[in-house]
Length: 62
Image 1 (spheres, helix red, strand yellow):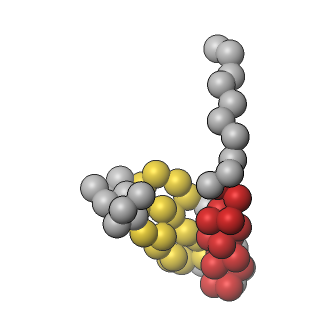
Image 2 (cartoon, helix red, strand yellow):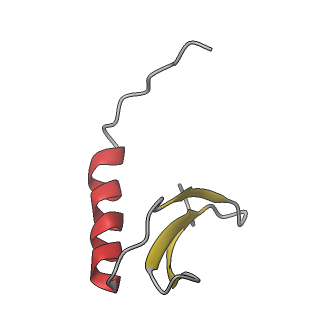
Image 3 (tube, helix red, strand yellow):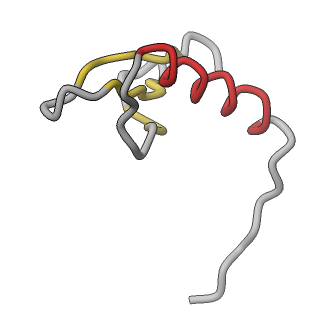
């Protein structure tokens, strides 16, 4: 994803979160949970970077 970026921020509950923002400004993924430390949120980002490239796609029946 050219020009996509991860953003780190503190939410209203004073927890660290991340979101992945596309070049058009749309949020395309987020942490889904708050982290007690900035380092924890950064580890979450690294985990996504490491496993997402090889993740399988599963189609679920409606």
